[in-house]
Length: 111
Image (cartoon, rainbow, N blue to C red; front, side):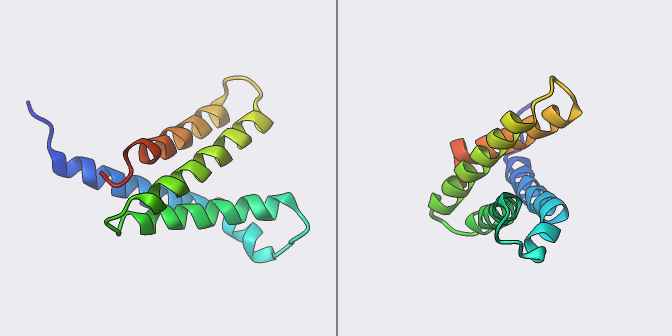
């Protein structure tokens, strides 16, 4: 059976929306608190901004916004994985899934 190309595009949009939803659910409260003197604020802001940029990047023909935001997102996930590593636990696998999604966009752009 041949793959159905439509579902590939639909899946990428679902991942974009899920990443944005994840960022806003986990990090928006930290951004709204506006504690500019904490590293957590800047991490949360980057999560929200890059996932929003990833979503918006899918709406444009050029791939630069998608690739750059996927790179920043991948770096954020790797940073988080390194800091919170405590063996192969559900949190690590969760972060690995986020890393895989960001690497998908980093490698494919808007294709």
